[in-house]
Length: 322
Image (cartoon, rainbow, N blue to C red; front, side, top):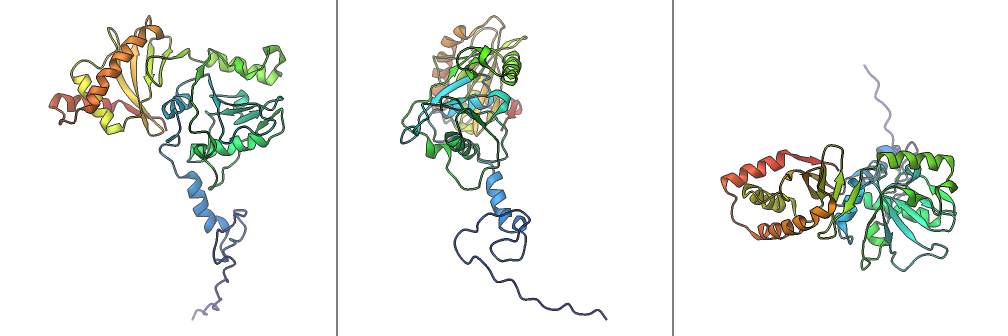
């Protein structure tokens, strides 16, 4: 007959109220459960860090441009304005699509900060991740890059750090020379090599001025217009379907609405353009399309059979980026 195992008293909780502090994954959980932290409260903390926030740039000025710079635009910068002003010794904070060697951020020799937007992250909340990186960059020694690290489950988001009244005005560059103040000859061999690789891979891109968050780009086969839109997805799909069924979804002869991306909670319709159609030639057709789309968005009548078929085609050609 098997012996009964001796009964053991449950460990007395060490934390009865308040927040359980974070410790090493293999250490005993401070709550006193007797389990390792990673199998107890650490599991909740890890889930909070990795849980996906669908619209991380929501409530930020220029949300559509944030999405475009994160997913579509190779080389661009934006001057950021912090709540309460800049800390002493920090003359400026600039958002950049990409930094040398994929650094998350860089504190330059003059104290200014560059914050990289297109870096990989283990956090499900990109806004919280970028805010954590920005705070560490502001406190870094001048002349040093900021390394990647795991973001705590709690902490400020960009919405907490940035001035909500300041404009968000991207400047699109033809290359990444903005990495290096002065001349490229002053760069280290590593930065110079990274600059050469980045410039070689950059797709020519131009931001349209006639509409918001629309970016023309040039590829060897054809050109494209990629337009980040703020409208609710279902409403936007209905409106695009109405225009497509009516034959008014293009941007002129030789152009075609081919589908859309879904990125950070927003839709990004994409048009194929003839190789000879530059950004300037897109300005007027894009503005005219914006007027047609606004009218279609106001329509709440049920879709016709043809419009439903158009909507199905658009949905089937939708790709989720993030």
